[in-house]
Image (cartoon, rainbow, N blue to C red; front, top):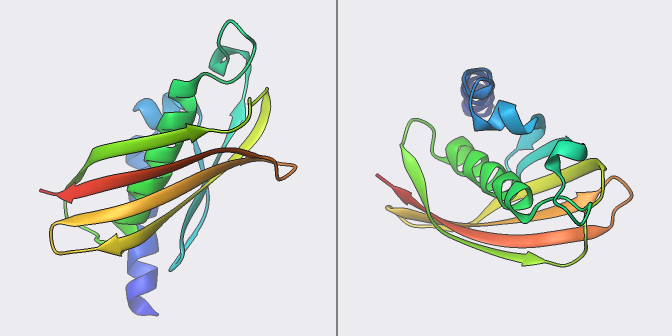
Length: 137
């Protein structure tokens, strides 16, 4: 229980530090975190859209990278990590509105972690799936 509280406090500090970075620029919000992973959200607005009036693929990719990265940091606090591989499957167009992103660690070794993320609309429509590989530096 104490370890979980320490992890949550560490992540909360990290989120505050991230506000002036790309995380904050995108408008990401932390929703929840537990032993199963993290949930973040984004209220997609016009500036997140491409010329086709759907959420830009780079925004969706960044959301999944953020969620998976936080899941890694929660599991391995204090260990610097970087994304070494990111695979994205775009399944449906996302429009303006709330997007919910769930990230979790599937497998880990001493030097790497394999993760997955999914993006859904607030109505539960699956928008994208992704996997990532994170290296411990």
